[in-house]
Amino acid sequence: MTQPPSLHRWPDPRPAAGTPRDGPHRNGIAVLLDVKYLEDKVIRGADLTRAGVADIMREREEKTGVHVWLVLWKAYRALQQHASANVAATGLGGSDFAALEALLHKGPLPVNAIAEKVFLTSGSMTAAVDRLESKGLVQRKADASDRRTRVVHLTPKGEALIATAFRDHAAALERAVEGLSQAERAEVIQLLKKLGKGAEGKLVTWSSRGSTASNRGSPRLM
Image (cartoon, rainbow, N blue to C red; front, side, top):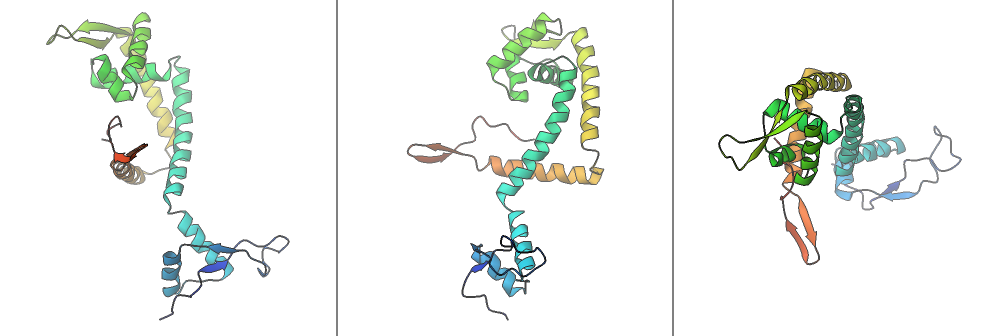
């Protein structure tokens, strides 16, 4: 069995300045790689030429938490542009659209319940409901089971508007993800749920005296 090398500094896989890409790499700068990761690669007979080390570094990088976050962030931004452009075309703001969509699919709700579903503060949602009510799109009514509670209902005008708007919204997002097959979408959804729940369980709130685990105020992943 090949023994791991005693030194863990390897030639930088990038060519030195002035060195042709296909020429020998004579003046590489030593870079420090993860020792255990490289040793495992060596034991398994990994290629430690310049190209081989480059492949190992690339493989290592693509498995880091930073790389996962970067890929997710870029994908989110791309999808968000599709969603935002579509919502803007309706003439509604993002919070107003979200409130109407929640009422369309969940039925009448108190203001605080709408806020929780769309991840807004109660104050921000109250302002959104006020705007929607002034446009005749929603109406506050007393709860039949508790007269002290006010529940927000869609008006016929509001329901017609959001039903059409959401149909167009769904079509826009369908176009955005059409590069994935149904099987791939199912896999992505499953993995993202697993990732989100795992990350949520490790949330830490830092204080001046140390750190304490806290999950308060974080959206629950379904």
